[in-house]
Image (tube, rainbow, N blue to C red):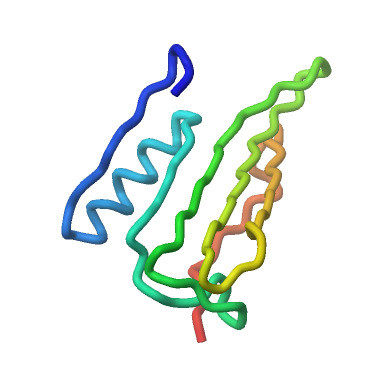
Length: 110
């Protein structure tokens, strides 16, 4: 661990509590590491992952010199059972000046 870093361990048998605390922690720009996942799939139609998978997420905010604000989520999935190498994804969000492009709707899982 580097100087100035902190580790927060969330231990709870209630999945909704763990998810809520995870969301709170990551909202302030921290590294989040999730372990002890139930066996499942990386994506709805993707490769499986094992119960020993470690998911590490980095949540970073970047400000450009022109005033543009970006929020980047980098996810690293490490699983020796099903993956030959780490599965890494990165998603970038640009802050808009107003809510003119914001049209939220409920999720529909099938």
